[in-house]
Image 1: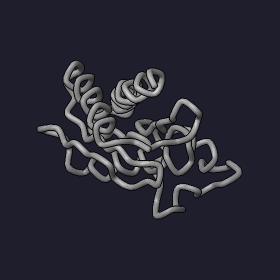
Image 2: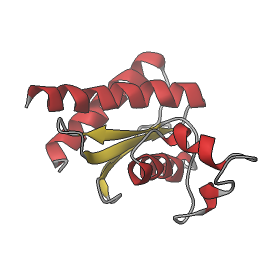
Image 3: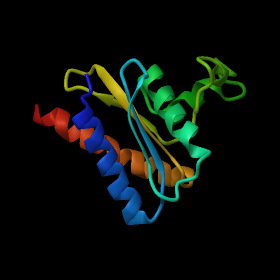
Image 4: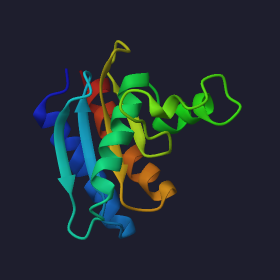
Length: 138
């Protein structure tokens, strides 16, 4: 289970990286059931990205992978073309990362949106690293 303290640390790590690169973003942390645990809308973050941050995290936690990995299944010509239309709509592009406990079980996901896709990914990776460090310490 992801605690609120962990979710806040994940968001703080994401915000720190976003500040370093000068990109205001929205950061969502979801639990293993894809329910919102914590959220941050940095000053100046694009309002339309709120839903995208949550969608990226939701995509990652539902499929227990990164959000962009889902694209390989749903792109035109792939085995599950249009998969992105399932589950109320997925966000199969970079910026969503599943969070795992030390035993390999999914405890949640982080989703970031507001910058260019590579910036969102960089910030999400920094946020997820905060969760990984905590899981390694326990």
